[in-house]
Length: 158
Image (cartoon, rainbow, N blue to C red; front, side, top):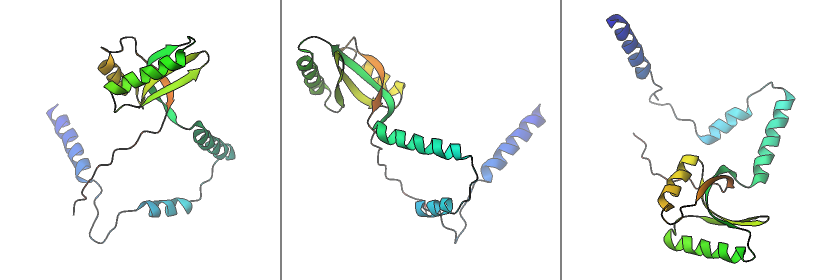
């Protein structure tokens, strides 16, 4: 048992020690280099695969967003539903100004949905945060706008 543990440990350490390293005089590949390499590849594939891939790309462009989640805080089909939805939006933004609020119409309802979350877990955090003010809020799948990527400054080691 002890020998098996030592053997496993040695194999694990040897894998960690043989990580990819740049030697003096070598350069990392840039995005331009990678694109040039991909353009020079000769790939043999079923033409149906290329057709399906181009369909997928076009479909994503036309969708104007990606699949994600939002928290719905209001819906109504009353005669004054639009005005009430706008009031709910203003009320929500006065308490949570950093959140995105969307008013949507799907006949016959006006809906007020909050956030643009990639995962249901992210939406759940907001739902818990606003639960006191909006106890009937619930998470819904929706097409969300593309979230902004956080810019972080990383210093490259010399």
